[in-house]
Image (cartoon, rainbow, N blue to C red; front, side, top):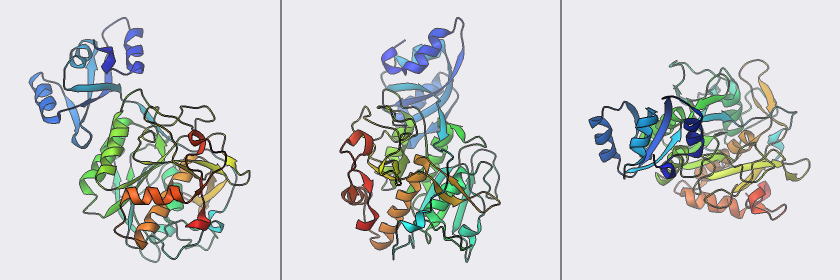
Length: 370
């Protein structure tokens, strides 16, 4: 067994077992077609994620040892748990923080989350929810049995149809919702890869320019599949906005795929205290400094998945759709802007708090400058 190609978490699991066991794993490779042919020849069953050069499969101890010694196998990981990055707290109204003439018109944001409730903010005066995909239960009609996805979409795209005083940051942007997280707000990495692959294959057909991912998994010591998947979306020209995680204040707690150096990783800003929120995950990562910037994330109000029509939440899940919405606003004004230009623009319009880039990146996003 080549332990240099196997995550430490998986090695620890294997070592703790006294008998042959099967493990759900994700395997990354350098040559997709060559590796696929080899797996076929040996009779392995798998799901493929070509866009990230990744396979999802079950391996026992002997299979793990065999595959880890193949030249084209880069790394083997556990199919890790993914969870929504939320914290329940009191209320703050984000509509007081920013005003814009460019409200995401002509842009589409894809939210990979727990689904979306058919809230009036998304459906009136005309529906902006142009696609709903359920990778958990296979339903065709939009729903959200957790509430997290509806809340996140509301921050990104709510339009205050009920005159509640709350409005999202891109209230005219179109919405695609992919339900990849279950009722408990959790998922497995392969389900997230299913969602990413759908975006990768369909982003041109649906004009997806921004993807919002308010979840995270524990990062591993090498390029993990979630990070590679997010990077593949970025390389395809999509602006990928990801939560840093709620595992602060310790260092080296950035979640995956927020650890990827390309994506825009958002930490939590406590506006009322003018500090980095204690729960906000910190860097560095194995690739460098993170997060990239901070956005308001404490005591926020947004759309609910039922009655009452609004609710409140805190967490880097809250900060992430703020930035995703602003990215759509930038694109509505500058349709040809690249994701690299958008990221550079955002970082240039931040205000530092402590100067510690592993706590705050470039600082908090200063709406007065946008």
